[in-house]
Image (cartoon, rainbow, N blue to C red):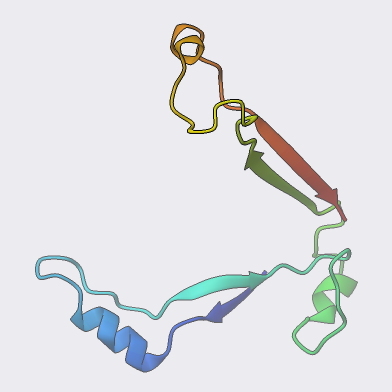
Length: 102
């Protein structure tokens, strides 16, 4: 994984100043995972450490991405207010899943 600093020094100082009294003030700047490198996601750019991949330290399995989406109502009730049927026989939420394997 590639981690980068996502906050500037002035933004860090401002966040530190705006911390409410009695709360612990932040000690480090924000950092976030900005990329994951596996054999399936290589782009051969200068940011990749090819030595890691050549030594076999990287994951050799597939990279899987899963997205969950709530399925909207079927539109029978235009104003989306609950009907008598909805109250008497509530239904569970329905979801769709998208899966990508690299």
